[in-house]
Length: 67
Image (tube, rainbow, N blue to C red; front, side, top):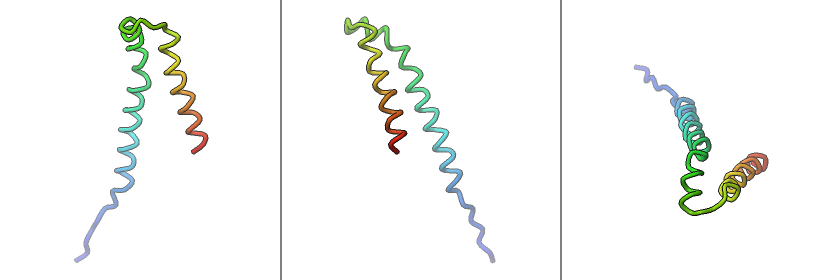
């Protein structure tokens, strides 16, 4: 008898890609919701709070270009 095995490697890679895309989308796009509560809690300016998001964005672009 012939053993039939299906190659699930690409299905696993595609599903992990979708999970990571959703995860990073939630993390990056929900940061703005927490700016005002954290700003009032720590008493900082909005510019100081958003500087971290700006640096995170620049670093992610640079690391993508570097590889």
